[in-house]
Image (cartoon, rainbow over all chains, first blue to last red; front, side, top):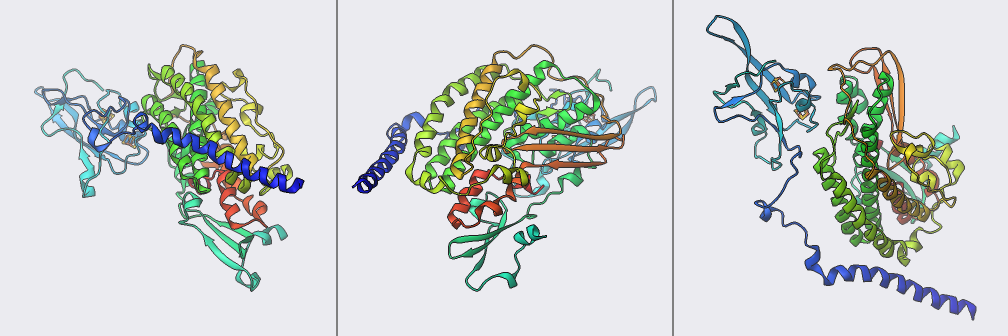
Length: 160
Length: 377
Ligand code: SF4
Ligand code: SF4
């Protein structure tokens, strides 16, 4: 008798635990408007990405097409996986003095691990992290970028 | 020698009524590329032999060519769910070697971040555990709450998974102005969600039938196999480094080390659930008391460790994670060895899964909370 009682009790208890769980899911099922997730590709205009989000390395230029990069190569040394290549050139100013300047700041987005070490190391703050995160392209050569814009030069007064 | 024989399966030793079956490397419940060679009689497991190496990335070798500040970002990629704690171990190890004292503020931030990351990891473990047992709903609920933590990470650390936040000498960024507000809001919200987790899965009759009394791990075996973390604490092995070897700000907070001496699959589940409450309490104790100060001390451009051997261990969400650095005084380490919790835990599976059904093996793997890159680094 006791065994049968226990048997039935176990079944009922089992059903009860299932109902307890279903009460949780039912709460969400009947109030869907409270729990809508993001409608991602559609909400691009309103999407807010955190300011510190590390999407890609960029080099900001001002309106005169000037940047702050001196071509010192410290970012290249600090990058753990060789995502940055610095190619420098030598400029000769009016007084005939030679000066090193950046020719191409090459950035391999496909290799970058977004560790922020290059940005932390840059003495002039020439590079920062951009928030763009949609990096899919059809050809991987497009992931190699030159960060300094063509024809750009260094800002007045930026020293190594 | 007998011990070794126990784990090596060869074809001649298979009885005619036994199968040799590969579980993985592409099995959904192995959570990555782990291959288990299972010797079965019908449904009963006779032997499990883990095969690793499918995603071996050579992180230890790679580390030899990196400088110390660069080392951290690689450990992010080992146990990616405990990225904060892994980088913390590297940072602490380098700081100890250089005898650098970090500001109090850094210690508090590191502790809060570590506990947030433990919560996120346990949430993911919980939802995946449910999913392995056939309850897909838990997967959405767990990920929904984890999202809040990842948003907090994104705001302060700038990334969601591979954060590279702890660096030798401090943390990468100071906390975001909204950080304290957001964490408190999350804690408030999560406190109402955690009982929901319990209602949904913990009491569920199907779940308890499959986990209670299944696959015991004794305390002696846990110690003998080097099992650490919640898995070992469920067997009564007091191994919480936060308690016994406090680092960062863990000596300033009150929390219980969750211990149980049952050691079955269900206890391992319960210990992790209880740990989430402890993490919440640790965060609550610290979040309002973050001292003012710098978020990092100024380190030299080139960090060189003195000659010698340095070891630092921390408690990640899976157990004891250790960093062993041998330095010859140059800017790169001479040799780096990581002691990852998942690796030691994994090899106890053969020991406890014997005699149980193959479906139980899935549950056992879930409660061991395996992260494959952590095992196979
Ligand atoms: S980006 Fe900064 S660190 Fe890199 S070369 Fe230019 S100035 Fe130097
Ligand atoms: S973010 Fe890291 S990996 Fe990427 S370019 Fe900078 S240093 Fe290299």
